[in-house]
Length: 511
Image (cartoon, rainbow, N blue to C red; front, side, top):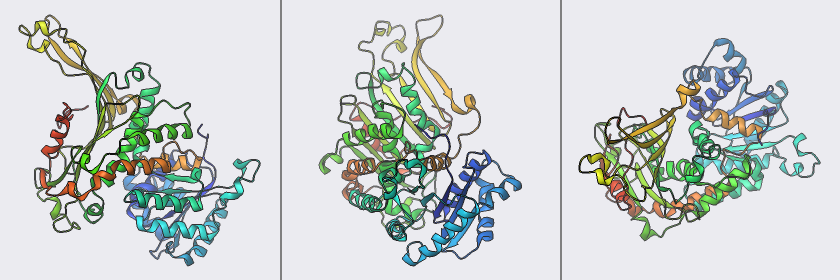
């Protein structure tokens, strides 16, 4: 069960001068502060190599907070910034932790929150291991003492939030998990995936388990197939160097989209608590069929955008991309879940850059009725023949909401048309959903791991995608779809093999 409120702590952000900190973390924390959701006693210590003092760091962050936070006032910023401190240090160097430890102590004493520490790795992935090792060597983590206490809740805690990418393959993910496990207990490790902080992703659990009209149909008897899409209008922009090392499968499918799949496919947990929910998600990732390299080619479609309506430059022309790169900017994969609920139901997962529109959704297509009852009227009314199947769409972003398509009779004549029930999240509840990072950091302060990944989930997801990382699957993909389209023709063929087609909404269409 979720704790009522987060306790006092010092939040230590490694990589404090980086893009993630200024564009996402600080604006999100500033929003929480203005909503009075932060602990009464807290401090933030930014750690980075850039030489500056507290005042310069606060001024550096102020314009970003004003730009990206939901609201801003000079008075609110001054009150928040008073809790923000800075330590110029290279956390990857062992000798730096004397200064970092002293900075934590000073900030904690000033704001009466020195007892507990939340570390946040907002740094390049290659720095994870040295920083974790240095935290261990510093003596700042005292996890073992908690197990010797009669009441562990009264003792200070030390937790760590680790950003993605969590490894680049299965072996590197295991190495990182082992390093974390040498320093922190699993209950203190928070592998963050900001997708799990999005309102409509969390709403998947409510839709399924708070409504008896959906859960009885949520299985292989009634669902034909499931599509999970994360499409972006933009290309790689200025992230070419990073993206060229990652690609669509590593960047999106292994992390974000397999997490969404797990929530869509999991069994009902025994109770709404982090351990029970993560246990069911682990079962899903363990049940995903791991295919052979030979099978992988028939279960995926890879693409790389060329010039088109969305961009006058191809991916290979983007800054930072290696000449002749065969990194995929589009990937569609069929996953099968070998368990009682989902046997025989394909889960199609796709993601792409420079697509026709920005769209993140889960689309469930139901099976057709066992007979075409109205086919006898087809000659007089063609629409009474074969009709499209019922479809449920959970729009994660943008235009957050849920729609259900079904068939209805047109008044005055025996003609059938599709109609839609639609729930618009913003129209119903008001206001835009808040930035996902804020609530997730708050959950880490509470000790609630519901929306964070267990090590077994991470390793299970890597096992599922490893066959699709074969370079042979990417040969010859350059320019096989135009920027501004829905991806390469091969992705349509992938679904056609199962008698399905992608849900590709028009530019003005909502769900």
